[in-house]
Length: 112
Image: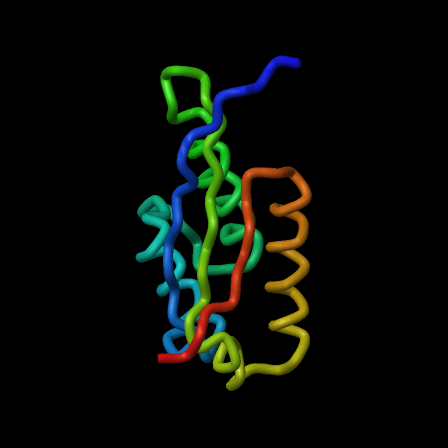
């Protein structure tokens, strides 16, 4: 049996309390995940930048090890609470789609 090398995951932390609206969510995730300056602050751009972040982590290790991205959301109950429920549904659909490609996971962290 051959075992593939695996890089340490890239773990980033966002605060749900900084993501109460879609615009705040876009700003927080862009800051934490270092989205490019051209990030358009809309759902399509968010999905594209999230995919790009995961792809970059997967190809970053010159030794061929596959990296991954884990985002821990602190105060997760605050995520998009000032928005219509469909905004949270859109967010969850995007992270689900990105996660199905492998290399990405989302975790709820404890409130501090």
